Length: 310
Image (cartoon, rainbow, N blue to C red):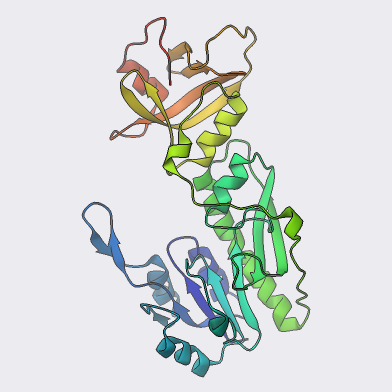
């Protein structure tokens, strides 16, 4: 089958590598133009372009994939399937009608759960044990298309968004090849999503990442893992603003501590009381500071008997 691939940033990279080793090598890769990033607004190349060139795929960077001239370019290529992975653009009916078969998307959740921009952290925040990749036929409405295939994976106990994101990126490549094989063999059956089970995964808001120490330790743990590495789960220690990067849930056998109160602080971590249980802070990052172990932070700060977070 002739395919065209649309993708941006890091998540699509494993998919390109998987397609390079399959029978569905893209006739064209399209990504967004190189753009400025960071405080210095330096122009950085799109990772997808660099990888496409490394793998020998033709690559273009149109300012707008919906521009008539680019859609005419695609029509002349006459792809059977257009593959979209983390492209960040709502496609029109006119665009979706270009391939001989249809456009497919690799979405980082088990649809219809967590439709939207941030499915990976929302699965962690919800306390789900299992997530995965859904290969769906793209429709105009976001993430509502019928499902071609899914691949599941367990969410590891201490896994944060960054680690799970990387694992799902690799899994998406395998799922895409599996889905394309089904289409090529004529065995690709599409099943509609169950709208009654649909949930949304909007982009994370920094302000929602503040830790409420009156919540249970398990809930705080999900918040920390879901907001790591970005935008970060936040708290205060005296006048200092901190981002908690990693921790562990422990039982509170006494239940006497005030939420946010520090029980112990040392090289093994900072044990903080919560509304139920203890949350042991293992890594943190002072605002405008570096990521450090809790032990490093303790060595540089005083912890009086009434020390408290929040």
